[in-house]
Image 1 (cartoon, one colour):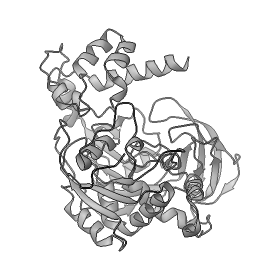
Image 2 (cartoon, helix red, strand yellow):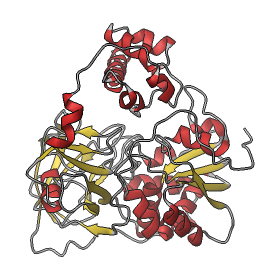
Image 3 (spheres, helix red, strand yellow):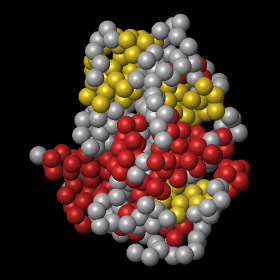
Length: 447
């Protein structure tokens, strides 16, 4: 399919405008100290969990592979610190179920220099070898989806990619880690974009940046290579502009067909954080062992953007950021699509872009609201960026008509942005109902 040759830069239909609360946008990235112990889950990605290749009592070096990919839709894990493997056991996860994890006790006297990795001439790699090298890094989508990056960069036989779309919107309130990466690591981002273009065969790359980030857009434009095949385009600020389907609509005025991927339009979409990390890791032949995380909210005294070793316990992160005594709720990710955690024993994983901390007084208004029956006001319909009918889906969910939700009301097109719940005057937890419905349908399909 031939795409439009010009950039629209117009807003997609519907969506919402929540308060941005991006108070950490001007805070430079700082390194978080190393914790005494790290918990590395073998399942930090969509797909099959990794297989451990170390044993209890074994010494490991920072950056050393400690678990291998178990199949194509899987990625390896690497040691976030030099130390010794204390245990390989079930540990709490942010999703709820306990998952098999590798526990590493860090050596206190270690400098924690990355001592594993061999530089490679990535410029000489053919496209397929680049994809395999991406898998060896353990890279997944750092925007939050945690889909293995090598699988996303693999173009199926017969398909053609014309455009690499780079998502720099970061539309979730509070989160600013991608903003800081664009400002501080523009060269690494350009290197990662170039590698992704070679892997997919894309002839051009477009970086979409919301227009509330003029500094990032300007820095990226100054860093553009002279070839003239990478572009920076501003798009209107609106939630959920960071959804790949919404970004495509804003830039090109076309919609990804229901049930299809951007590949059907000749596009592959990647997050700026993912590509910046690849631009740094691939030439060095190293694995993903840390990521930038926005730690913020009224419940912390030292908010900011921190470079956090993967596997760092959440309790250690909050202690360093100065969690206030009144802190009551912790959310991993953004407030619209993030997940509240029930335990501070869970670690920071590859898909964690933010840690938001709220006090009881911040939650009082929301928690004090009762849930009322749907009044058919249509606010959820007006806000749904996919043009669904959340009101009808919610009523069907209440009646447990899950198959009907999927077959006639396109539940599969919902990407759980939360706009419906945000706008509902009856305080109905619509998106939470949809998540339950999807899970039940997946379980039935698997059975």
